[in-house]
Length: 300
Image (cartoon, rainbow, N blue to C red):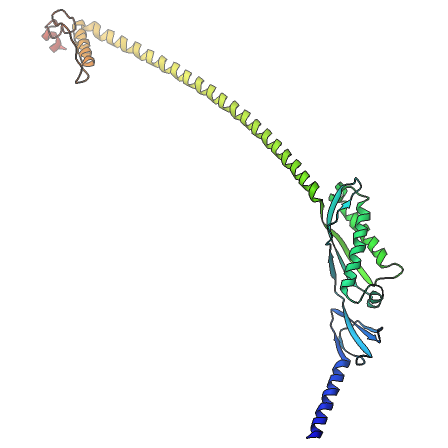
């Protein structure tokens, strides 16, 4: 039984030793083998690899993918005309030489991020000091980013190379500091209000002009219509008078009788109409007094 236990323990020790000597490098990583604190080997190709067990040799990994560094500093920068602006930018970079990177930068990606952030910001400050706000907001932004990338590459490829490659440098936003931005917004708001008030005044004046013209056209139209109506009415009255005169000329007694009836009809159009007259002396009721012969009325 002790022999079986010894064999099992020996196998476990061997397996533990083998597991400490084997390591896998992913295709997204560099594998760095250290021997007593010194870089022994850099594994670039992915796969299964061997090393001595700790503490003789250890392994660490660095990311070989394209990394992104975003700006986090909101400290304003001065332009050529001494305007304070805040910019947002990002940098795409990767580790190209792991040995140089570890010796001159650090053991992980965060070390490169911190140092690269400082270098990029200094390069942006230097280039922005040479340019105006108008140039930062125009198509001249591309040369600015190219100059910043060139300066950053000169810094990381200097006397002590960082072992990294800067692929791209981009500006995502250029803005005034908050105090200036609020002032600009207030001026823009005031200008827009001025333009809006001017448009309202112009619209009101045009509206009054249109209403005045419409009123004038209405008065002219009404006057012309009234004139034409009066003209037609006059012509109708004249024609009616002519017809009445012609008809009455043929039989004056019937005409007088007819006109008396029309007068009676107009005088007693309502049930409550009352007239106080003397039938004996009034000419109004002479038809009822037999002044007009009945034979004349019947003939008509």
